[in-house]
Image (tube, rainbow, N blue to C red):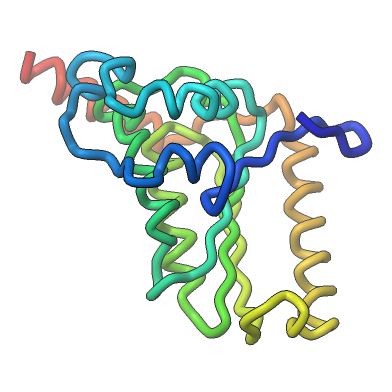
Length: 193
């Protein structure tokens, strides 16, 4: 991992690196082995193991996606699909219930709200109690064409989110919505045996 001031971080990209190697011709095939038995039975388990460990060890998860037809990219969707077994309705991971997360999306035009929702929905069902969302319509097709004013707004907003994360570090509590949903899922599973 890299270090920036007092923060250690690891970066994974859907466009290259670990996530790309996991997803390239390796979309979730819906075999349900991960849900019904063990994620270790997923045909892609070995490719995902390093990333799964990084997710488990992280205090903060940051997911970003450009808007593709009002939703996340195919690579991000495939990545999220591989972790469906972690949804509270299936086999939740206890470590998720103490994390914070950020969803960031960018668009030349519109669609950031629905794109962030795609990611935030998975994070909620993983049990992540605090999820920040930031969508920005940059009105450009490349970083070099984004106006200085927009870049300054991005810097301010992301700094505000970072400060909120720092203030809650180690003190994130699971909310009533998550507790309620988890309890309902537990009762349904108990009844269905």
